[in-house]
Length: 223
Image (tube, rainbow, N blue to C red; front, side, top):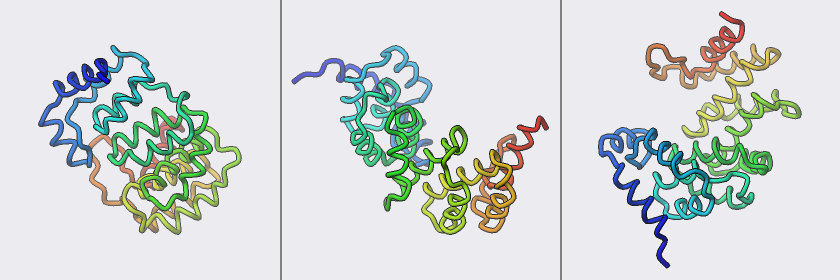
């Protein structure tokens, strides 16, 4: 069966391919060469098309999958569909966009958060931590924040990179948003020293949790 719409979009994506963009993305573990601004412009023109989004995702191509995330209807996916998509999304950008633009807007986000949080696959678990960080920031009621800090303290130091970043973000979120846990969050960060020496461009905040927490609190206080 000929899928003219899919073929047309895939051809357009191929035309947007830039070897320089691909080379830069490859340094971050991504395997596409399409400028994200141009990708968003294409998505804006296509508008929401759930059927096309599913077919684009099915190609397995990273640029096509990023476009699919932008034109999909997140609430249309079943829980198991999102679970399968997340497990297929191995490159960082596809994984991050699926979590942030797809799963977070889904009615299944809390169920998936709980399912992924302790998954043995560290990439899947990192999605569970990302969703947990979202709850820490926006809906902390019912979360065991002290328990989360216990897990971070015990596991973050030796966690694989993607999971470590997600846990570190959660640590910083707890420390910056919840004053009653701030001292402990800072202490954990200082003792574990995760990302302490991460190269940070001028004008950007270090991902080292104690510095990150301090900067966010300063901004919240109007400093």
